[in-house]
Amino acid sequence: MVLIEALLNLLGAVLQVVVATATLLIPWTPLIAWAAFWGLAVNWQRLSSVIRSGGFLGIALVALLAVLVWGSVAPPIDGQHYYPILGIKLSLSNFVGKLVYVVGLVVIMFLAGSAQLAGVFDGLVDFSGEDSAEEEHGQDAHGHDSHGHGDDHGHGHGEVLLADAHH
Image (cartoon, rainbow, N blue to C red; front, side, top):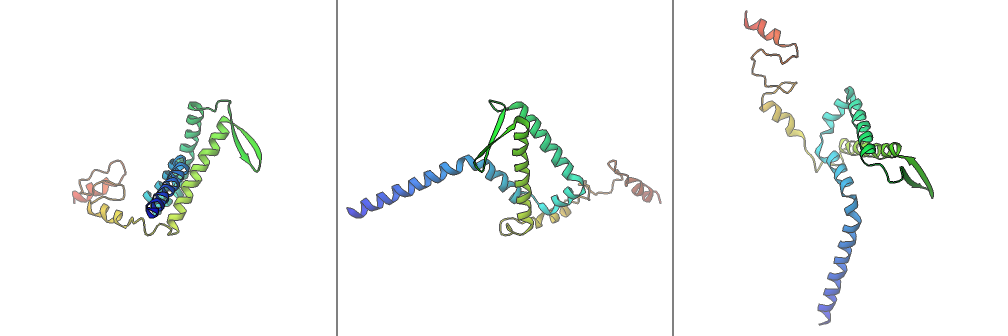
């Protein structure tokens, strides 16, 4: 009887730990999902080359648009965001406060990408099949089928195919 009572007490304690952990983690679930997406679902080998070739401007503009929309749709009740930093209550206006949040999300995005590039997630992600899948489908560098019909889709390389076809 004492053993059963001890096992029930242990089960109750384990349940309390699980509930306390879930209560602590549930508010952070969207942020954890954000970091997991950027660290595990995005091929940073390819994305880093896009960012270096001008994609950072797109990221910056989307972030700025997110700040403007979010600040317009959901302003704080009293118009201020409060950040407790080292015991000091820092007060920021609506859009500046939203900018702090969005910059934080972008920083988490880049940290997750740098962790993937450093090999932290090597056992969890494998993007080696992406290149072979594109080759199997016969796609050229622009993502179009390369079946030689001579249509350049506006990229300027169809003239060569047409000129070669007439000779």
